Length: 320
Image (tube, rainbow, N blue to C red):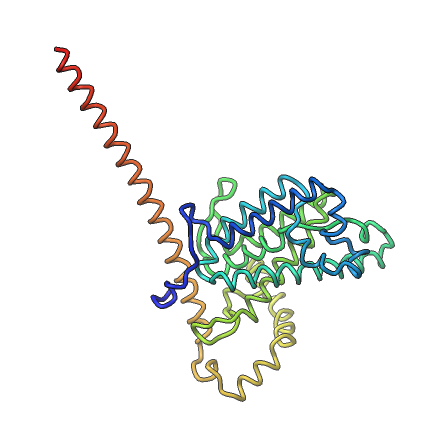
């Protein structure tokens, strides 16, 4: 991150968690407490497709309501840990905008999916099951990590996995679990739409003010990059059709206006590399700070130990 932007970094406490993430963690905790104390509140806060038309605010509130204790723990921990990585790079406003848009668009897609499934199957469970959870946004955070730190290795289940594969792994595990755990079916649309819609936002719409660009059209962040290499020849033609539908008109207008992309071929890939370098530097800085803190504590303990040992020796000599 440039020196000019370093002064605008969000405030970080001693724990390293930003004020925005801690504030949202409080919202998640209070939301869970409310439905614990007043179970009927789920009807007004969670997404129930049959009631969404009169209660349209469900599209917003449902993302911040966790109905289970494990759910609220996972959401709060994920928000604090992943937000700690993303907010210094995006800024508080952009992170808040990302959370709001991903949450709202995910809820809207889940609502439409439930209605479609009801008309196909005629099963009322799709209309009356309360759907809620922060998992869509958490999945979106993983896509953001994939974009910024794709080659960063993360240890999961004793395996070192690169960050760029984490969203795909989460999607695969979620779908696999749905065959064995019926309760997990309600979370799958939230997770899958969270991954896909956050990728659409980061790929096509997120503004990069420092470079005057929008989105991240690099090959390393393409839709097919979520899948194994052997599937990409099949997926790339399909993705190109969607790409043309989403941004074909804007690209033509930009070409007519001779924008930055026309003047500087390859500027998108240059910006993508700069973004990843900033992410890597931020991660290295945090690791260096943790290492310094550990060394400082070890030095303090060693000093106290030496002091007590010297005092014991002095006491022994006095007795002699």
